[in-house]
Image 1: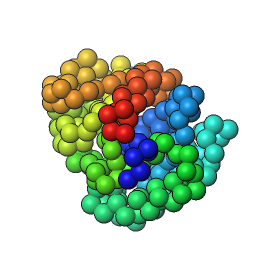
Image 2: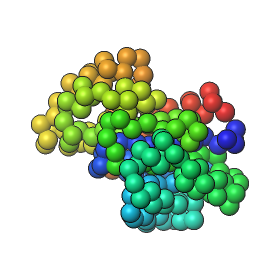
Image 3: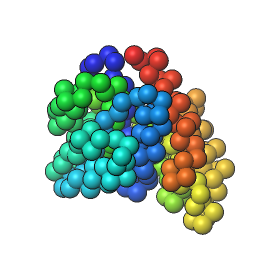
Image 4: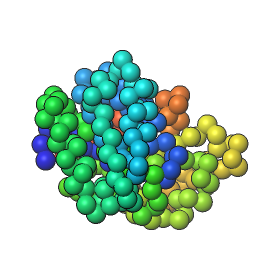
Length: 206
């Protein structure tokens, strides 16, 4: 791996807000002088890559976003055999040698997802309140072992009968001393805290 590039794996269930988190983080990073690129994973399409290009038009060059069509379970492409993602990342770094941050977004997956250490330096797992306050108690390596757990969509918790206090408390309990952050990616609430965490890891890893 290039020692000057922080590689960030973003995983989580379908609809939890992985793409939205990246779309919220990228402008903050660019404003702070960072030069990110993004690799997305979908089984059969490039929907997430296209969505990021549209949302960040005028902020991030569309060529800095690449979609990988895995053709199989997302776990395979980011954990078991990350060859396609490694190739996509290497191509981006060759085309954009100024890159200092590389996001790898997994396709929608379950609680057993992890990222291969060959692919990502930092693993962020995203849950959302619509999945219910019980989700942290279900554990799984995505929840317990990720470097950062993000609980997203805090704005809708009251509408989906999720007690946000219970969900956050349980998350801290099952993760012991690993960090948990709450976000509403559409308004940007809490996203700066996520960006700050990632920068702190950059200082440790790079």
